[in-house]
Length: 100
Image (cartoon, rainbow, N blue to C red; front, side, top):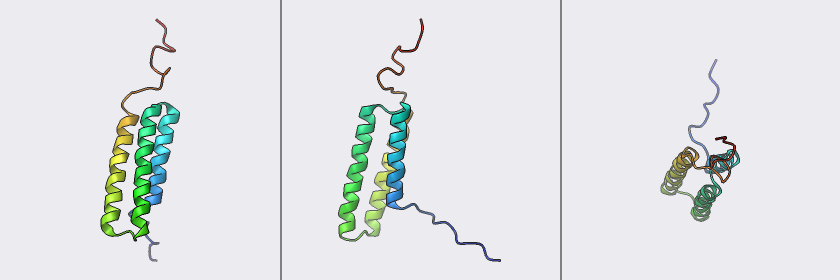
């Protein structure tokens, strides 16, 4: 019996963008991201999405795919760092809920 088809080793650009957006929204909902952090991260994601549309208009080549991958890798790292930098939204960690 032959094994089934292997899953692709890559994730589509659209799926990566959706995953990045979900990570930003999750960080905002949980308070790990401040509004300003989420705004900056969303703006960077939108910039990548605009660039992708420009690239696709002329047909996406290998260099353009690699460029998009590199940009999304960088954004992914920034989301990771911002989610763990211990900044808090106003009212979370600024003396509220703590008894002295």
